[in-house]
Image (cartoon, rainbow, N blue to C red; front, side, top):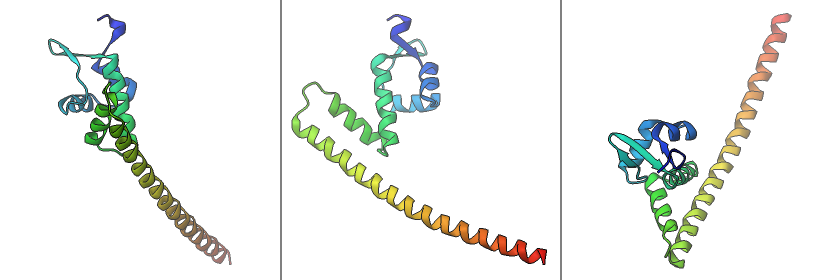
Length: 132
């Protein structure tokens, strides 16, 4: 493997803005499988792509176990249609959950805006009372 075909642990940590500890954790959980050269970890393009998917699914709110399961099923060359339909259902369920969270956040922000406006109004009244 030439240098252009591989990555060191620090390369991936820097690229994805994650800690070395996180990369070691993902390896310990069987999510990525770097080769070893003594104590040095050597990551392939496939490891890098898999890491990118792990972080993608993590951003979407999936646990590492769920991400691993989805990636392993999706990566199989002989994946059955039923497994893909199952992945699609899990993605849609998570999408619905995220949309509900977004709606709740919007409601919270509306209440926050009203609360801030109320405090600002009290500040204005307090300032005008101080001027009298």
